[in-house]
Image (tube, rainbow, N blue to C red; front, top):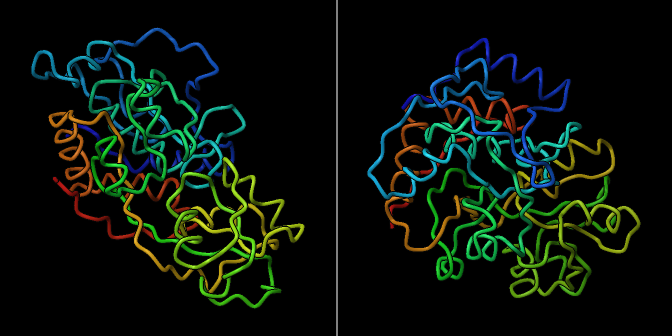
Length: 309
């Protein structure tokens, strides 16, 4: 794998994320630039310090060959989730999911500026993959059997867990999911956490399209808690100091393996992405991407083994 990180570049990227809002890139509202020469990029050109593959070779007719020849790719990610996918001051998303997406692109010979980022909320992830709006989805996307009926997944590349966030001081005294039975809880429509908090714990769901839209209802007491994955909630706690806290310091009550969503039946592309993820774990690239993004707040995890189903 050519996606190595240098210490100096990694340090610069951390400073850029904390002081300047992170990497510049192309969003779906902007016209993408002309594809760059895949042989010209170096680690200094990439906001996460990744080395872009020079003229990579793939089997003719494969999805990898098509992307490498095109020199561009469209990746769906969240735009409102601190640490994983959050739009910065320059209008481009930043975070761990963005870094992982750019890793896949780099191995295809695609420079960061030639990635088109499409905002992809929980309710439209499968639809966007099925109708070709995006080529990949890297968006805190939990792998489960129901979703596998519509799309395929590479990974997992990270394992999160569902948790609860409440107002600072925990005025309702909530100690776990059993305490929200019959109470109003906010989560995102179409998400695994939203379904579980209703079906398994009897909460009254106040559904919305993005997790950031749950913050005001929690502030003003319309809901007693917000529920989703612990890492997403940790980002909101960090971003809104003194307003919110995680129940039991973020104790989780599920396992949520995050995968990269892609078109169902493209086994060769899925296998290749899994190869990229495995090598990135082995050579320390995943650790470095984490430390530049979510690792600013959270400890570096032990990344899960990919599932070659």
